[in-house]
Image (tube, rainbow, N blue to C red):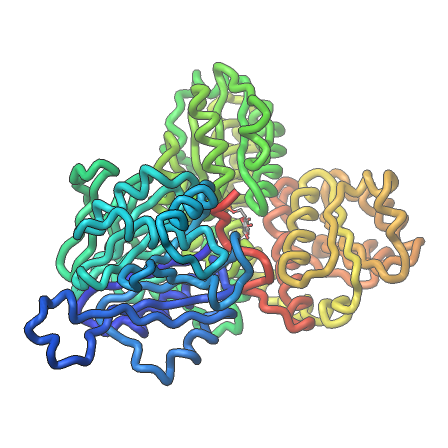
Length: 621
Ligand code: G6P
């Protein structure tokens, strides 16, 4: 939630900041702003100290980055040191006044912030009593005023004092016109990375924001403060003790963070799934041999596991549900799914011999992070599954399994979901093989099918036009029910989530057998039912459930298996996926559902990459 970017160096930074904000727009897009240090135009300044020659120029605007860009196009705002922000409002409406950056009383310090200051009301009262003037409704505005209070010439020290007073979360980046050669920053919980460039250095909420300038990064940890200059990077702890940190290089290419000819990131990312799935298997599965070093448990430890807990939210929790079904079926280990946002409030039980798996594409979801911290404090061992190298969840876990889907920019998860599912398949088979609870011939069959799954996904994508035609008919419906059983259930839940996220149509995912206990009352001529009906062990049951809603005048779209000759009798529209084994239909049947949501949303003129009210990574509770 909210995106931050900063640059200090030799180059003019306006374009760097605007382009970076566009890449961060998925984190929040209700208002945006930029602050740049610029030299004052006065001759008499020549004899003054260099510091006095600079002022902070700010532009901010409600709406998307394009609005901010329009605003500054005709201005002279530019310089070699600047900060930018794209907002997802938490305190105060998304107006121009509430947009970041925010300033102190003397307009010498400008701040952008991603997070929440929980004790801001108390701090604000204190600052007002000392004479500070506030102009916005935001919690963030206390930060520049506190820095003003604490600043005795070194903004970094002021930042360290600030961290000791505020409660909540945040990545904070500040400029000071008295020290125009530097940018100062701090982090509590919200993501922040340092990009190391040839002609300057960057700070950003996320690596793709600056990927066009550098692939060399350093991570910032909680309660660290940073000073970046053109040619130097310094990291300190909250007490000012210097910390040394090695940079790392990412292999993401800049094209992976661009649309590359696709109309939207979401569509591009849907089409990248064969690649993301293949990359996620690479090095772990090859020619029937499965290697999973990351799990790092002996066969004996695996056999003795009493329980596995999977912590996740949103789309990741649907990968978790499929994972539970797979692990329980193949490895016969009981699995409990924990909704991240609920976990720490229930005084959770952490068994002696248990394993925790945290699934989070961003690695930054605050609830998942808090849940793993709670589990860890009770002695749990945590394995993270994430797409972002060096993310907070990755660093705080005992082991990390990276999905290699590449950066996902569209707010709703598509390619990270299928990459997560692949990891769940691999983990389930791996645990099954270590426990000896699945026959070798079954293992070989599953692994063989997994190796050819990218081609099957590709063949579905080749028929995307068929789904578009269905969407062209269905987009007028206002109620959608997605029904599935067994391995089709997580897919029904995910299909419904995709549709509501990007089209704003009311959609529910349901276990098909539960229809009779309520949802069937919704069914009438205005309802579309999407059935996940592959040829699996519950196929006949699904047919009956579809029949029940069809006879109540719902329109039926079935996702079925190639060669199924019965399904068209029960359905108004059918899309067929290639044959596979029953447990693997999930990864195939989700693809047409992603496309369906995409094309329905496009028909309704929605912004699929940046749906209203949502953000890619939720870093506030
Ligand atoms: C947000 C995103 C979803 C995502 C969820 C969990 O709501 O919009 O797409 O599924 O967060 O994110 P995570 O990074 O923890 O998987």
